[in-house]
Image 1 (cartoon, rainbow, N blue to C red):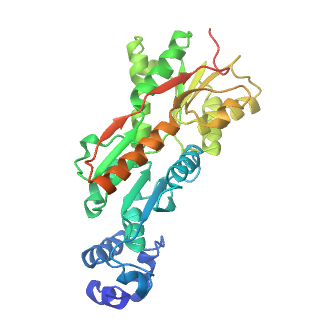
Image 2: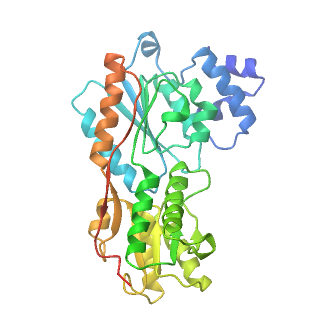
Image 3: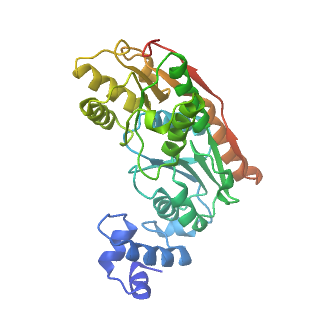
Length: 333
């Protein structure tokens, strides 16, 4: 099969087919879906040599990273690379935008590179339910828990985000805070949703009503988004004593916005983050955060994938314990 054959079967032009195969954005979802259905049906592989086509199997493992600004994921990619460094496998890393369909792109890259295994850092349940049934190789979803998603070839390793967020906010409540703002999260993000629920449940546990909760401002997992969200909260005039940020990068951006407003952390506003990225330990003030066991999460994800590839191991779903790392960014009131 060639690109011309795909164009003929789908009725789309060669240019449209080429844009879909090369993941260009200016293609309608209808066209992309129709073309990828034909690609999947015929197992079409883009840009491989005739020699490679004759090979029965590659040793490629694809890493798809959802989000380009979250400082946690580069650390995880590095750890995964270290795990596979002494193996026969070749790792290929593909980054997609935080709001893009990671499953569609993973399917495209796996076909192109003839992958035998897949690791996805960050995912959205809706995207998996919609399109993962077209991916048939062993896959591990990292940082999301997918036990109930219904796929036999999908494993997952994660932190319990709801419980982590709940513990962080309960700590703020124990320290006397009752007006706790929420910074971060994008629409449709399972991770954001779980952490937000934890923020909500902790306050309800302490007898607060929803109308007593601090304000919420959403945004991507980035320093800039954290800064903008915090700046908007401060300018709203709503009185707060603490902030729970859904990621450390957003917490650090929030601290910067608080400082630029002439206030101090933690004297005026306390801040807690989530993830435990290395930068948080060297920031000023040092950031209190829900610290994920990054090395354990990555190593366990790799072990599960290798077991599935080499021993026909079954899929499994595991939570890795977290810690609340108490540093300098929270004050008792």
